[in-house]
Image (tube, rainbow, N blue to C red):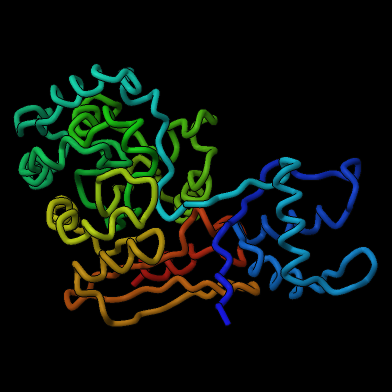
Length: 348
């Protein structure tokens, strides 16, 4: 017998249903998805069973019922499908380069900005010199790729910083955003305000700054730890944009070899002792690069799903935290918030 495929389609909340929309059970289902942050039908079923939810006729719920209701609620605008959220959402394309979508103009723009800034380009004292040196060593092949490097302004990359935040890679469409190259992002890094955070100050998908996707979740973490977003260095493990995590697998070794020297320079120059990674893949890759194999602590979500965030120690005593991805888990819900684990590791 052919095995049934594991449900991979995920849903997140959109417009909350009201009594006027009929079917009051939809409100309970919407609330369940909100508690989880995102859910597929199996996870929703377990959460509904955990809280004792039944159908309007008193019958127990099953996976078929969840599938039907998720599809219907999505059509009515109460939920939104999240087919691929394994990495960072795309930054607002309009904020990067006006040549996106202009055909030959894009190619010309990419050609013109395919070199990294030289060490002399950065203003004196703008970032630590060791990080500058790593940046100018990036090769032209990587610099021409669609992507981005830093999610914090220059003030985060000087002085002492204990926490370094890393997603997996920039999301979006590398074809439609071909002019938004790694080189262009580095040039913009020096031109934009020093005290800046992509999580707080950028508009993603046309939404108000700091309100879309994982932005509110990350801002919640920073606020809970009494950290200013613009003072926390943030980036992605690899700088190349992709539509999904699967597109990176064949290039993993090459991309890590090209991008890791910048991360190592940040860790060394700023005295970082804790690296917070968004999601399993980012955490796995960072642990490999730093040799973080010794388990330190973990946090298990207090819900039916029970996802785990974990912390591991390197031989030098640094800590790598592999947290649930903030675009999939609701960090603002105490039942699924890994912030206490991050706080515990920073208090070591």
